[in-house]
Image (cartoon, rainbow, N blue to C red; front, side, top):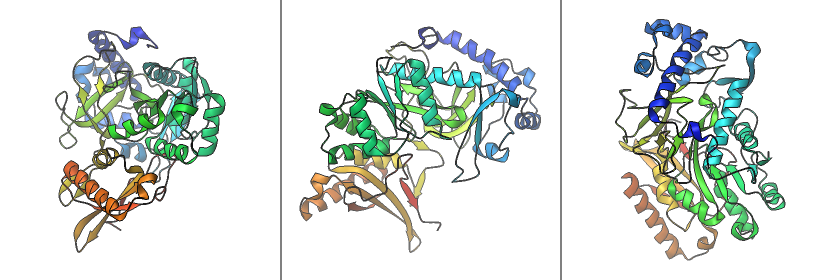
Length: 432
């Protein structure tokens, strides 16, 4: 299903010509902001000299630290009377960042989210339950406006209050949900504890899952339990929020809306472009944002561009599943490890429950990794030999995936902390 077939199937040469024209406009617009006026001058770039995509690499990179250093209004390029909304990070891991929107920005964002939802087969006959946070977090309002744009009956539940979430799904016949993967796993546990079989007792058919990286194993686990089709999504507040890229029904990569963004994949060390299909760091440029355009933003997320055309007919390039962030990579005894690799190993095992967490410490100057793993309720009642066998199996699977041998601690179901937002998967005590 298409939301805007003309734009979604635009020939590549037309799409790139549109990007060139919009890049010329966005360079001029960005230069109205204090930050880019200063940054362009430092880089010796005249915005009026930007003629198209061939000039993109002349433009300087933008980083998260830039947004923090120029907080709150340094990147605003519009008259403040034309700015209608802001979203901001909490600043729990550093100084806060803010993103500003004009009315046209909000409309474009809603349109992109509607495109994404339509790609999954959702339409105006569906009942949509939004199970992510509203307020400053972009996931709530971003998906809400897109769902209404698509014409779905929209239930603005927000995050948490799991029993009320389940009750509403039954009462209103929810068919589509938006949820984080960690909360989705918790929801499955609560369904099981309440004796609810989603396949039998609910009308759920589509789960839009995002806001944190998750593995193909997690997707399969969710689909098996919920009896719904799980779609991977990608977004970040600096680029509006959700709706940047989404899977279509082919589930072979996420189409990124290239009429609104320029995508680059670069080597995180050299910042040089990588070949198609090679994994690297995402760099993005907004093309249609009025209030706060951002140029060549180093996202830090790691992925690759999938080669070839998608059978769905959309021409916008597809990015692979996000494996993590360049600044989230763990170095353990000299080995590079991503949490997603450990999740891949765990979610392939039916005996593993929904919760897991990595603990990093130093023992006598050497790195030590422990992985706490919740065991499925039915299996936890097994005998000690079975538990020891599972512990060794998990240890071996993680070693095969990462080349690191962890200590594995099996814990009872629902022992590890639960989060209705992004899960905290890594506790690094090496610097404490």
